[in-house]
Length: 390
Image (tube, rainbow, N blue to C red; front, side, top):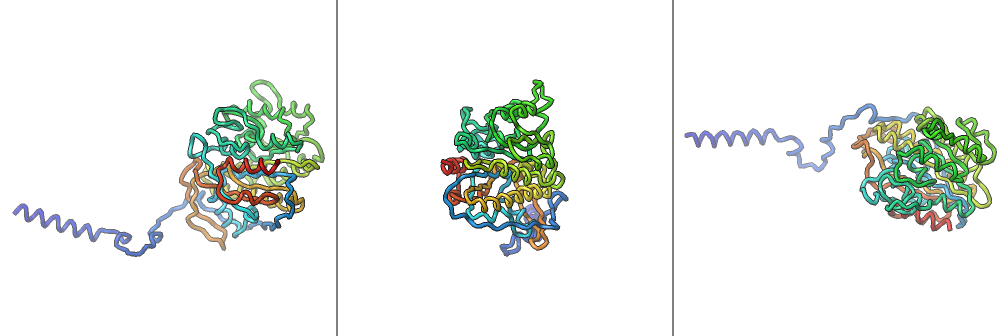
């Protein structure tokens, strides 16, 4: 009797379990997306009211490279570009460039890189370790593309929206095993011979623990020091040091077109018969990816992309300038889950406050641009530029 009762109980339980199955389990449809139940925070959503106009450019006929402009969107993976494309109504300046590729970003000792190793591979053509800048995996200094340009007699420049002695700019200018040695890293700029330097990080140049005033030391070497856009735009010649903030600059909508102005002023002052090498970084795309705020991140990408547009129009007129746009890594594990191209709105999900290891885009324009098509290791990007500069 007890056995019969147990069998009946189990049978009733199985039947109840069958009725309790979800609609998703019973539905034979392959449309699993209809069961998604995504929720979005305020910082996961953004809408653009006024998109900006993008440029169109023609690939120059000349095969001769006189100038190289290397543009890096820090933290700018295909995810960030995709969100920016939607928010600007289906158009970005960087996507007007005729040749497109991808770059793998991993470091020698970590699958997920940082700006130090990621930027160093681009700058030197040598893949290195996490936290290493301008050195090989054994810690030996490696010359960067900027150093190559100096040896060729070309003028050089670096302009960023982060502190000027941070990872990516230092990858091109100096050598270090530790990005946190910020005063030591800033001091490398004094004797660097770079003709144009703009960014933030003034607190590592003045009021230092060692008592040095690096700004005055640069002025003594013939640099014009500026700390506002207005003062920068008044400079007509010579070497420039611009430090616009104690650390990083304000968000894009607050600081104004500092990156656009500094990039075009750099081109104006560096342009000469022997050519120039200029590195431009949209540094704060990464910062707002870490903070998981898609609107701030998008505005940093737009600031960078508007600068790309101005650079491309100048390069088109010049005819002998190679322009490369890429990233050191992607940030935030960003996923575009909803939105509207017509309404210029996105809804996203960030899966991490750190970096992620997805391929990043590579765009190229000008003489030699076709060499960047395809899938590359990040150090190969630097190697291709070095080969084309010879």
